[in-house]
View 1 (cartoon, rainbow, N blue to C red):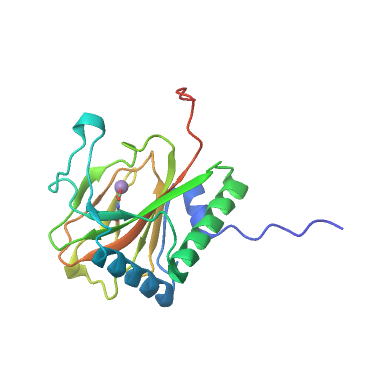
View 2 (cartoon, helix red, strand yellow):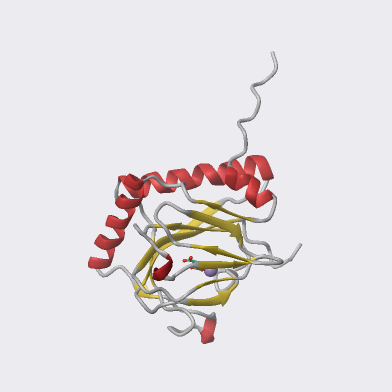
Length: 207
Ligand code: OGA
Ligand code: MN
């Protein structure tokens, strides 16, 4: 008997294999989004968020004109919503390894809150945490996001800009080393979970 065929690759796998970025506007159902938004509010209330810094080493500094969000690294899942999202993303990681042989062994993520007026200037997700980042992922947690709210993610693709409203349940993924991107100034508080699939650190040799 022949082995069962592989399940069809998901939308996001196809997108990463093709253009190198993809948007799934229906990745997370409202219940999961609301559970995560509640976790953000709880952790923010408990003082777990810090102003995000830019740069590395001696140049590391909080520069809100460049990057104005505050973040909370998600080190341990605290509740069902956090366990659920981490398990969904781990399934995606394994699927990428199986179908595209990306060899991503690790995942790191933080929540981010952009207060009204905050933005993140155009950048590449490379430093300071290194070249191990292969895929960037952002899951948005904002109900009823409209065009007047701003705060879009803009991915600089080869010949155009891809504009992604940070609407509840949308997951954006892109190859970390390939696409510069920015967060336009938001006019409303904007919450997300941002993470990276990472490969093993190299031994100082860039292959
Ligand atoms: C980041 C980032 C994009 C977004 O945190 O590095 O680019 O839409 N976030 O929040
Ligand atoms: Mn980024």
